[in-house]
Length: 257
Image (tube, rainbow, N blue to C red; front, side, top):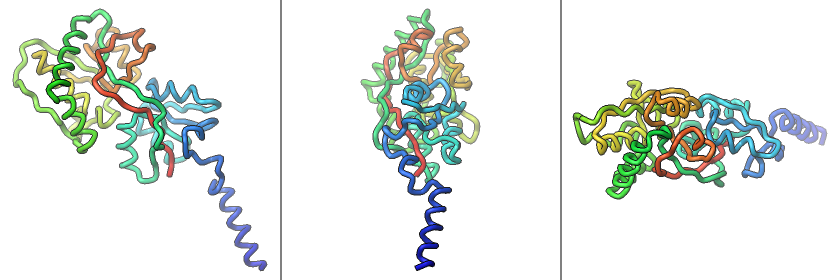
């Protein structure tokens, strides 16, 4: 009897120090985020949404992957991020998972300087044609469903005579943009911009920068477009214009298993 009590006491102590069995610490649904510490990538919509959760604290990171690493170490209780990169991180690390219920739905657009209405209209025309001929769908399917890691779109023109289009992005958001083993920026957004540039007869130049610098780059005309899985919001419209949406996404929450 004494031995049985000793084992029970030992188990209780282990649960106390490891957190096992404490229901309050578990995150099984969005309701459990109240009062928790949530990791986010700085200046993303996840950053905005997380700050609205009652009594929750947000911890900002420059990269989504850094937020996930902090989650695995117990520095944060959850990570709020878009569903496509969340799936990449969940596949990469077996000790994290995505909550089934999405936090919010959103639309991605291409950012353009407010004065460049002509360029915005041309990109919108190209997007409409690419949607109608199935190019956008094939690019999204290749990366999101078939696990493409290099490119889903080959240049249709070897030479372009319409000048250069400078795209600024943040290559830390797979599968929309990341770097391959040669340091090239690849992903859904890159392939879509290649297809658009083929239609506009323009060369594409890609510059990688911090996510929270993208809008400023476009606003100051240091780049022609910003393409980085950028959610269309009214707050961002104060700085830049957006094209029509080119895809939809969901904001989700990653937690430890």
